[in-house]
Image (cartoon, rainbow, N blue to C red; front, side, top):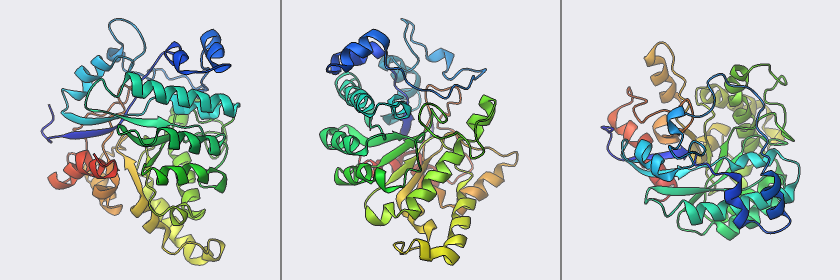
Length: 350
């Protein structure tokens, strides 16, 4: 049991078998998935430690994260988690090539999430998934599901065909703002399918390189969102950068502010420094926390970005690099309370 009091976990990966989605699909997608599965594109990089915690495998069989009762026993109860945002894995469908199939899978998953997960425990809240191949279809799905009382977020993949601030993606943000939902970006399929290369230099060789460089994708998307005027166009929109690290944020804000001062003529729609938009509209999840040898360096970094108002606690359950809510011990008690609970409570209106 954590000594922090109540906790809100913003990244809990519930799983499902492909067959679980079949009842929620119409033809021709129903027969396709029943015959050959969903066919997610994953990164293709081999992890010697796997992806999931071995103790998270349900005793009765199935994938890690597929048993709500085990999630309750391993996460909700021992760590006093008042709310857990179920983020799933379906956002990876955005790297497949067929936009209609991707949209159908997301719709089926969202119906499955509502019917078979959100009523299992009062702590469970849902991140509805949409695919980015066709933003108009994504916007239609947000309007269809976004009003459900237990849906608190829209989640999309950070593996994409282009920087996510570009105007073709704006219908997603418009619909999210219209429904009062933040948009979360989550990694997992960088370099797969129709997505761009997983690093700025191209395709690395090893999983350790791929995993370390995921923050590059978040930096590129965030700069794109600011410079393309997403937060001017949608002033009530909030964006959550999940599982992409956080130590990179100070230098990115400094560099972007510096360049803006000389190059603002290229982005005349911006009325504030880029760092102001980031501080006012963006949140980052704690997991994975970069942990330097000198703990004070992490405290200094957190202070540089006003972390107590921008961070949200995430465990990343049931992944191998799961973080219990005992992280960030050197923050003040009030700052930790905000990160572990209050920031998410306000963002998701819980």
